[in-house]
Image (cartoon, rainbow, N blue to C red; front, side, top):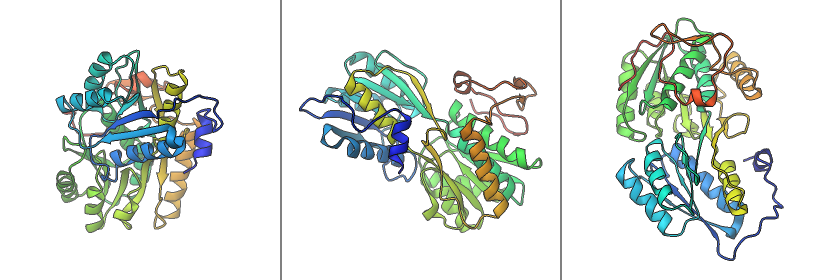
Length: 355
């Protein structure tokens, strides 16, 4: 892990002059899935572990996994605040309102919520530009498909997921005008059984490239068994499907966790809406498969570089919705606020967004 480069990008220097109390700074984490999901929660926990390593004994962390979104989340977050955590990270969209409620009751504690949009004096938000990785995934998928049919296993109909579905399709369409995409909503972040069933249902409909916004390796394993290809989600999933795996879009939360903890300890923390992506090395393409054709590898690399440098942004117009409305005018690029409110499918996706 390239921590020297990553941390310098956040202006974090190892020789910080911050002073620490004798007692360790306490940081709590709340995960929606198990730390062993090999996906979303796994990578958040890797970030937690790397943060502890970076600060040594100056920071002590704890986590609670498998926390349902809703009333249970509020109870867990409250308990972490009551137990003396100075900073609490809540890492799923459905934790947003519970986090805000607890933040108002514990004004001396700092809260950070992943993927949401509500903030307070002691609560910020953070997320990754996952649409960047999805667009590259779409480019690879569009070049590799033989049936011209991609499959997407979607979790919940929130802007992040809808935005990423669009990014995949636009990427695929940019290299393959005949491509289509089938979507199955499973209404879960992590359920290997449901994810396997969804993958098989999609493959039964002619899908030969599998993409997902769920956290287990199940869809890739199903793809491997049936001889098709797929892209890993959140973590490097190459070992689960050595032949099927195209690459994984890996999340690296450690730089942000280190940066935020340092700011709170220094007294310089200010709540904000942080987005990290290719440019910050917080989103990477992991384990690009050696079995890919050379032209696909080249296109993956050039698309990644164009997005990372800022030369290209996936959500630059003109973009028309599948209802025929111009949603992004020619030459205009959606800003972060607008990206966080995407509630439409792009032209060519033959589906409707669930209510």
